[in-house]
Image (cartoon, rainbow, N blue to C red; front, side, top):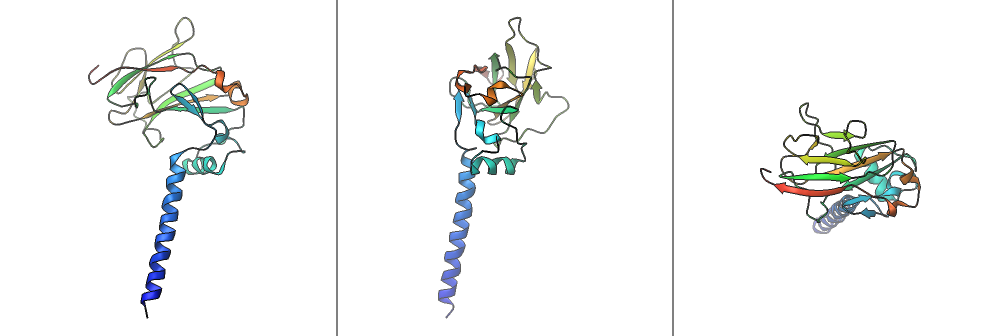
Amino acid sequence: MFRVPFLVAIALAIAFGGGIWSTRLALDATIGFGAIKLGSWEAFPEAQTADADPYAKSHRANAGKLLYATAEGLSFTATTDDSGARLSGSCTYQLTGQTPTARFWTLFATGPDGRPPAADADLPSSLNSRMVGRQPDGSLDITIASRARPGNWLASPQQGQFRLTLTLLDTPAAGSSGLIDLSMPAIRRIGCGNV
């Protein structure tokens, strides 16, 4: 007598549980469609607009991110260096080159989940265009490491993998179709361990 309702209840629990699990897995797998890859850097220009696909809207809502207008901002992320190796907190990296034209930009290291690290008063957890010293030719030279370095230094997590997020604000690059022609800073691994 209770066998059929019990089996129906189990089937419904598996169906709903599996559906919710697969939906969360699909939403966490990507930010959206229309990715643009420039070296180690990846951006989703449509993900931050009102015309974004449902996956991008879900990511933005889940993370509590601001909605940028088309020409207001563009976020690039990098999870690997230029050789294709994953960014690791036990290694030291050098970010060199030019950023695309922008009125203001920010750079910070996040955990693998994309959330910024907790702000520590002693460590520079983020840098921006107004506080970074530039080379005579206007290019960047930033060291990314878990231990202090002279010059422009961005603190990375001491353990595990991380990603870099470069957000360009008030940039003509966000509103144009010429994103492929942009030149992004290079990420080169200097060494790992006590280097």
